[in-house]
Image 1 (tube, helix red, strand yellow):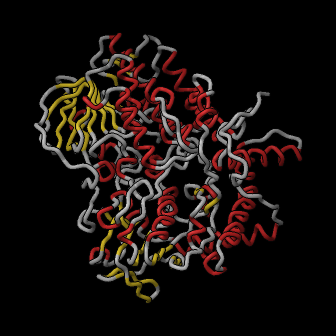
Image 2 (cartoon, helix red, strand yellow; image 1 turned 180 degrees about the vertical axis):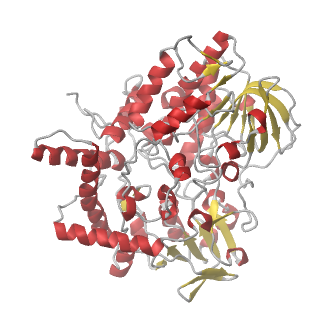
Image 3 (spheres, rainbow, N blue to C red; image 1 turned 30 degrees about the vertical axis):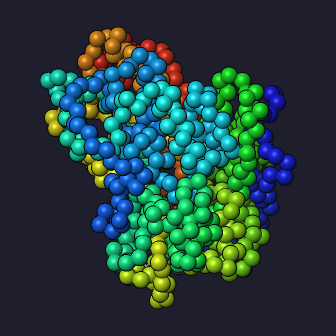
Length: 629
C-alpha cells in the first residue's frame, strides 16, 4: 500500500461531502414515493422538442461573438493534410500531439475569435470547472501551468487553452471566426472538399471533428419568450455591455438598480446566480427543478507543493481518477473530491453488503449499493440545505428529490448562501416552469414579475439531430450525409470511425470511453490513437482508412449488449441525461452508448489496440493493416 498523496487543503477547509446517516425501510419507501411524485410533475409530452435556438429571440445568438471583433481576411484555396473542426481542448490537444509527431500541414477551423472552445464562449460570471483542475486542464506539465486553485475559474481555463496553443505554435494553423458549411468526400481524389460561409474552398486528406458534446446553446420553449422588451441573454453569450463588470468577478455595476430574472438552476445556474444575486438590485430565480448542491471545498494550490510533483504526475493522476470513477477502488485517491467520494462510497457499500452474505459481488450488487448509499447521501444533502438557508420555505423548495446521478452532480460553496440575501427571491414553479413571458417580465402561476433583465441559464442541445447540433453537413461516399447515416442514432466503431465516411475521425466520448465526469481525458487519449492510425496509413502508402459496415455493426451490438442503468431509472427527474423523461428508444440509447466494461477498460483496450500494430477493424485501401489479423 502506497502513502496517499493528494491535493492538500489548508486547515479549516470544509469537508468535500456530507455525513450520511442510515435510513430505515419506511424512510426509504417514503423517499422513493416522493421521487416518483416529483418526477411526474415535470414530465412533458414535448420532451427535447421543448427547446428553441437563440436566433430570432436574443440580441446575441449562437453565431455572434461579443468578445472579439471579426477581422476581414481573404478566403483560402489550397490543400491541407489534416483539418480539425473546433478550437477547444479537443482541437488543441490533438493538434499539439500531431505537431509533436511531425504532422505539420494542418488547419484548425474555429467559429470563435480565439482558441478555447466552450471556455471562449461561456464567459458568464462565476464560470469554473467542476472537476479538479489537476486532471481537467490537459497538458499542464507541457505548458508549465500551475493552477491557482483546486477548481479554477473560466478566465484561468481560457488562458491555459491559449497558452497551450502558443506553446505548440497552433495559431498559424487556425482560421478563427470561420463557420463550416459542408464537407464532401471526393472519391476520385480521396480527400474532402471543404466549404465555409466565409468563402473558403479547400481540400483536406483527413478531417477530425471535435465540436464538443454541448456546443449549441438553446432556450426554453416558453410562450412569449420573443416578446420581452428588456435585456435578455444566454449564459453562453454573456452581454457585459448590459451588465457591466467582467469575467474575473468584477462587480456588474449596471445591474445595481435592476430587477434581474434567472431561468435555469442547473450546473450553470448555480455558478452564475451568486454573482447576479450579489450585484443586482433584486434577483428572481425561477426554478422548475432544483439542483442537489453539495460542498465544493475549493482552496488555493500551494505552488511549492506543486513544484515537487514528480515528472509524469498528470498522466498518473488522470488514470487514478478514471480508475476510481470506473471501479470505485484504488490504492490512493489523488483527487479526493465529490466525484471520487461518490463512487467510492457506492463501492464500499457494495463490498460491505456482499461481505455480510459471504460472497463476491456481481453487477446487480452495484446498482443495489448505489440505491442504498444514494438514499442516505441525498438525504444528507437536503439536510445541509436546511442548515445553510435561513428561511424554511425557501430551504424546502431548494431540495432536490432525485438520485444524485440523475443530473450532473453539483458542488458549490456560495450558491445556497445566496438565498439568505434579502434581495434574492426564489420563485419555485412546483415543476411546471415559467408560464409565459411578456414585454415587461415573467408570469408564474398567474403572478407577474416585472423584470429589466432575463438571464437564460438553460444549457445546450444534447441528443438532437446531427445537423441541428453541429450546424454543418458532412457528405460521405455516394453523397450519403452524416445526418442520414445517424437518423436512427449515432453509429460508429470505437466512437471515432463511421462507415462510408473515410478518413473522418470523430473526437468525443460517446460509444467509446464515455467519461462524462472529465471530458478532457477523452480528448487527450484520442491523440495517440489518431497518430498511430495516421502513421500506419503512411507506412502502408494507403490513401484511405475506414471501417467496414460489419465491424461497425459488431461494435454497435457490443454497445447494446448491456442495459444496466446506474442513474436511477424511473425515479429520475427529467433532464438531458434521460431524454427529458421520455421513453428511450434505439436512437437515444445509441446517442448515449458507452463501452460496456467502462471507461478504464476502454482506455486499456484502445491502448493495446493502437500498440499491437494490427489495427483490428480498420481497413487501409480496403485491406486490413496485417494480413490474417
